[in-house]
Length: 239
Image (cartoon, rainbow, N blue to C red):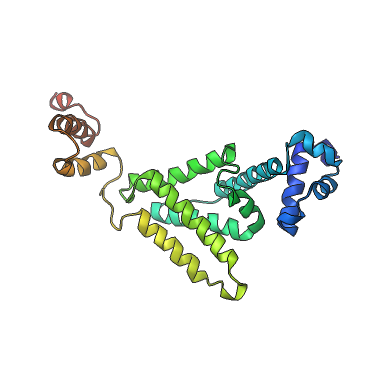
C-alpha cells in the first residue's frame, strides 16, 4: 500500500537508480524504467523532459545517498585524519556504486544544483576550515576543495578502469596521501587554536608582505594586534 501512495516521480527515480545499479546504464530505458516503477511510459515524461532529465534526478538521488553516508560517520578529532576519512568515504562510495557514480560525475555539472550536493560541499568546506583553524591548510580553500574532489574522482575512475587482478589497494593509499601532502602543511603554521594564535602568526610575517602598502600594513597590524589579544581593544587593555 505504501508503494501505491508513494509519489510517482520518486518511484521512477528509485526504479531508474535500481536498474542502473543492477544492470548498468544501457538498461535504463523508458520501457524498462516504466515497468520497474509500475507506470506507463508516458507517465515518465510528465515528470522529466527526457532521459537526461531523469538521469539528472538519479544523480541528485545519488548525492542524497552519499550525504546520508557522510552524516552517519563519527568524525576523527584530528583535522588531517578527518580529511583522510572524508576522502576514503567518497572513494568507498564510488567503488560500491560504480554505475551511479559514473552517472553523478560523468557530466561535469550533473546534479550539482541539488540541495544534497550543496550540503555535501559544506561538509567538505567544513573539513577544510578545520585544517585552516589548526594551521594545517597549505593552500587556498577553493584549491583544496578542487584537489580533494579531483583526486577522489580520479582514484575511483582509475580503479574501475583496471582489470580486477590489477586493482592494488596501494594505488588508493598513494593517491590519498598525495592529496594530503598537496593540501596540508607537515607542521602546524599556528601553534594554538583560535583567532589569537592565527593573528600572532600572521602578525609575525606581516613585514614580509610586499603586496600591501605601508598604510594597509599598519591598519591590518592594528586589527591583528586586537585579535592576538583575544579581541580586547588596546585602550581597554590598560583600563
